[in-house]
Length: 353
View (cartoon, rainbow, N blue to C red):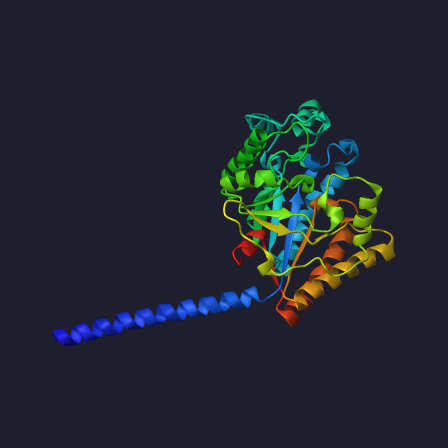
């Protein structure tokens, strides 16, 4: 009897071990299959007024930002309809409810830019009585995004922080990022992905990002005209603009090209900025066809295609912009059906590397 019990126990152990090995094999096979697919990655730079205050008069943008607030739920509906995974890189100031909270949540250190017109704090302090809360804060929209399936809340720093501007320091960047993380944590959100404002990618700040729990950052395309994002030379502008309509299908890349380095976040290269709707039909169609062609190339060749834009880019001509987005997502669906093209957030892409 004792011998039979020992034999039965041995059989159960072997069965358990075989099942575990089988599961491991299945998971490995599944991961290999996933790694062989191409993916669409979308990241959105969610800023409202904090991303453009140095470039526009807020009085001229009230309707623009009202439209932006209305368009975000429409984007979320489309993402649900087409099962799109997206990372929303959100300016931390949007987590505040009003200027009273905004004042209370100022970090211990703020950037002292040589060009003081870049300071969100000086801007807010000088115009608080005039600024619309609808243009400055979006806690309700952040909650809606966070509660929508397959959406990741990332960070665009707290104050739309410019990491390459004269006068800012590592200490003020740390304080800024720490504030973003604490504001998100108060809503039960863990920030894992970051997009540097104005694409001012500062490699010397990557270690700090990692120390604060940031696992992913969006980097710039490798084309020469994207390497210096602060350059406003005519040549750079011409090539960046022209590239939106013409050029080679060289913006996507394979998962294996992504390289994890100990102690710094995974750098995920952007492929294409989705420019807003243009009333010039020929240019608008060229823009859409360029993206469709690049997406098809990525799907066929099992590559990553990283599309990004600002929700406020849809603030003018909102219906036309949503219509264009639907066209692109319809094409994504075709690529999914034909090539098993998938959709990932920045954090989900990290898990495949």
